[in-house]
Image 1 (cartoon, rainbow, N blue to C red):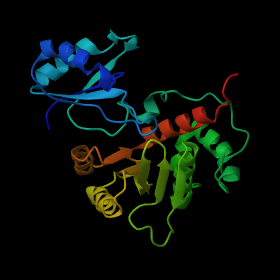
Image 2: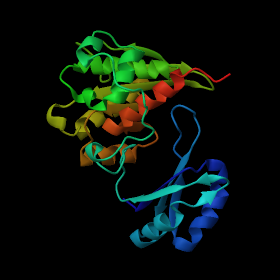
Image 3: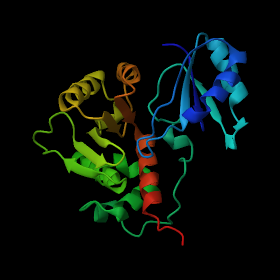
Length: 259
């Protein structure tokens, strides 16, 4: 896989500026602008360079640069990591962490149903996502509630026969969208294997859906990560950190508008 630089804070309409900025660092193979699932806009760029040296130089030079009022965050990654952060969750604060104070109820009291109160609890105690007090089915219901909060109609498949995915999220806005979400809570935090991702890809094609997403409290194996990267326009993944990002986005959308 060609060396890549991920640049947060860029949009496709600034492509001309980006191309000019990157020229001094070496030969560029491609520039892509993944679309944000919630805004249907691009807010970052993936730049592939011919050499590791060029990618490292560009990442170091561009990180912290301001363009059109936006401060960029640039990082080099040799392998695709689906919406995950660099450091282990146990050793760093969460991004955009929601300060809701101490929870008034325990996880056992809250898991009988999924609602905003449970999501707020998980914002305070994200490690509870891995707790045995949350069953695999409850995890699927949590993911469904998050996407309901994002403005989608959601459908949970039956527990006995899920058809290769657990949650369908559908919305008609600018265009009609249908996302198929496979939820995985592997024991011992084992990585999700490539067979799961390949299966979702097959179901995605059969259903003619917009995109397939793996949502897991663990991570993806190397082969699964590569498969997602090779099909990044129709497949995506969210690990433990990525799901926490969904939680914070859900609560942000639930906040009453000022004025």
